[in-house]
Length: 360
Image (cartoon, rainbow, N blue to C red):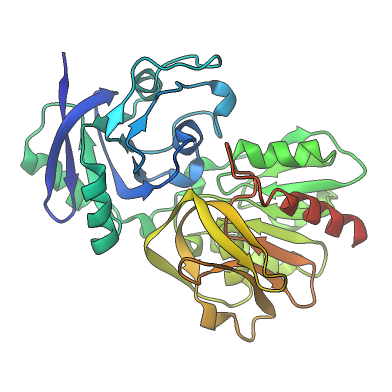
């Protein structure tokens, strides 16, 4: 029997569709992604914590779900919105269907929604608070849940997705890296271990003294969810370590580096999410296709007098996509070089990080 589900938006809109996944109610900030593949990777990406994800591609679930594609241990999105969901997937690695996957982790999904019209609404009004219900609930009750939720930018989401104690990912090698975990994706760790370096994952609250005791050769600040201004302790850590070892940042990590040196951050209208964002290197003119997932960006004007410089820009809207320090071995990117299933244009970021460590 088809379950009726509801989607409520902050502006009072109520949409009805067909429910799948868990029978529950979840709220979050509604955002859209334009990626045509990679729904498993997106659903398990810690950067989506606190958000309701909508896919603009009209069919999801057609190749099923494999634990090999997980980017964390469970589903991180609050709810999932699609035009059409496939319940009979075809893929040799598939272990379960998309509805079974969401049900396993207590996440509601809603299909038969006009995602094209909803995308246009979000582009016009911006990301907004929302809720998805796969249970019997009145419109008034659902809207109340939407209205009472804490805005994404005010939540301490990094604490909900990061490790609480140091965790050895790969035993010590000649060169060793500490990953400050703000919501790291498994692909980031896999790229580091494949480059034959020791890797330790550490909480975002780790002190400078404890990091120095680890005797690592470089720091990577991971991607993660929410407002980078809410993880201000890391800013002090980065400032204190900036003279001691190479530091790199991915996505949220770039924003934290920028804040650490005095730049400013702002919340974007609807962010960048998808696997086809064109980024240009300013020095070479080379263009990369990139995977992106972020709600915040760096204020370009605020970079002046920070010691940082912008090295890459987004060709769609001109926003900063990469930074480097003018004198220190510190650099970062706003997009995801570890993207799965792709594109892989920017994998060399990890090689460059290891090269900087070796030459420092």
